[in-house]
Image 1 (cartoon, helix red, strand yellow):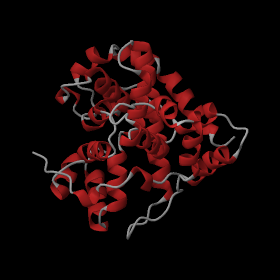
Image 2 (cartoon, rainbow, N blue to C red):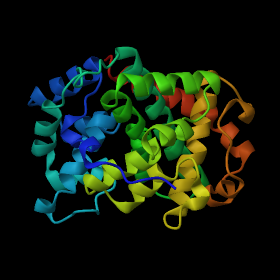
Image 3 (cartoon, one colour):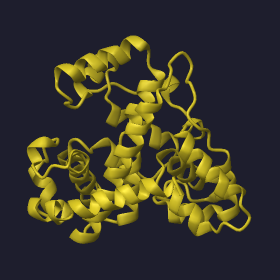
Length: 284
C-alpha cells in the first residue's frame, strides 16, 4: 500500500516550467495586443505547464469554481482573456530546480510524449463517443506531470535509481522502483499535485489510475480513454501498429472507452498528424 505524499514535495502550479521555445511563443502572443483569446487557448491547450497554471487559477476559491473547471476553454471563460494572457506571459521557461539540473532533452521528451497522449485521448473520445474530449485532452497533458516533478525535485541518488530500474526493465513503468524509494509512485504523486491545486476529481482520477484503470470507481470512461491513449502514444512515437510495443491495455478499458483495438489502430495516422501539427505551431 502506498504511503502519503509529503507536503514538502507538493509544488505550486506556478512553479512549473516549460520549454524555452514554447514559453517564448506564448509570451509573444500575450504581449501582442492584436492576438485574440482563441490563439492563446490554442497554445495553452498544447502545453502541460500552462494548462496546469490556467486550470489551477480558474479553480481558485476566489472564482467560486473550485474543483469544477476541467478544461482550458472553461478556464479561459472563468478567468477572462486578459487574465489568461497575464498568466501566460509569466510562464517561466526551463530553469534549474534546487540542486537538480533539468535537462532540455528530458523536458522535450516529456512535452512531446504528453502531447501525443492528449491528442490520442481526444481522438478516442471523439471517435468512441465516450467521455469528454476536452477533459481527457487536459488529463493527457498532465498525465505524467508527477514523474517529471519527482525527477526535478528528488535527489540525484533517486534519479540514478530510477534510471537503473528503467534500464533493467527495458522501459517498463517505474512505479515499483518509486514505491521502494518513496512509498508512492508518480501517478499517486501527480494526483496529489492536482488535488493540492484544487483541480477537478475527473482529472485527478485520470492521473491516479492511468496505469490501472480497473481501480477507478468514478469517471471510468475518461480514465479508460486516457489509459488506452497512453499505449497509443507509444505506437505513434515508434511508428508501430503492434500493441506488444506499448504498455499493455487492461481488458476492461476497451469496453469503457467505446473502441476496440482495430478501431484505435485506424486512428493512429490521425494522431500522428495532429501531434506533429501541434508541435509545428510553436515554430510558426
